[in-house]
Length: 365
Ligand code: SF4
Image 1 (tube, rainbow, N blue to C red):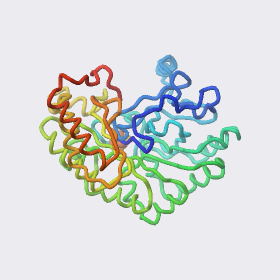
Image 2 (tube, rainbow, N blue to C red):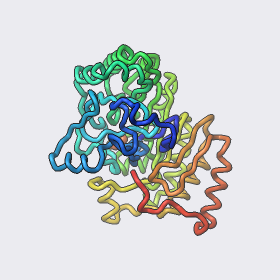
Image 3 (tube, rainbow, N blue to C red):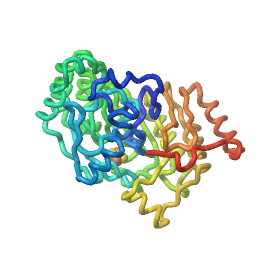
């Protein structure tokens, strides 16, 4: 899972949106009550948002078993997720699904096998936007689950297209995983950075190898740290997420301490913590239903959160734990706010009754 980002993971500013009537249709994914509403998901993909059609259209679409949607000239295949901080970005789907697609907790792409979208279609989408819209696009998010899986040559071709078609483009971002990054040299990543790919969202999930193996992440902690270092050395910014509760009750604090250590080793610009929610149809849901995994309760999740923060040793990072899946929204700038965050969590842990946690029914992916 990935998510977060600069403007901060799961936060959508109340007054920050351009009024719907003035927004180009292609940028309306995030406007509440208009073409679509965004809701957060549980993975790096957890900290991400799912851009979805309104309920009535969703139901109608499901009845027809439709797998495509379009907004203006931009077409979308299946559910498209993006980080909350990309709410104002033009979402351009350049791949389908996730090249990894093995994580036990993730149901995002269960029905959408990984594929590279034909470049001609991407060209049609982007160049099909009215000129006035193209002039207003400043940020682009490349979907789906890990567009960085594309070859450097293909990504370069896409970045070229975006710069030609969008004269005021300032930033391109994408989800990524460690395998994508380790498949490229620092020089290749630096060249992509030069072409505008500035920010990557990566789901560490856990800094504990046993937990990563148990959830079938398919990557080790060392690989994830190395992949992230490669991106950082190339000058890219990183937004990294991890998931509370992922190791179950038994390894809860081991997962937490190791996650704090791994995040410190990565030292990203942004950290987002989410709390595990069970997605129907996933292996994790079945493991919990069968009793193979027992999840921590809300206080157990907060103890994990405290342990992660206590282990964080980062140079300058925007830390957020305010995703809709979390029981207690909290965040700050690290390292400066570390002790204050820990003190706040200690207060809650010492007197749980004094604080109103987010009710279970309000938690969302
Ligand atoms: S890497 Fe894992 S969590 Fe992220 S999209 Fe792929 S399957 Fe989902």
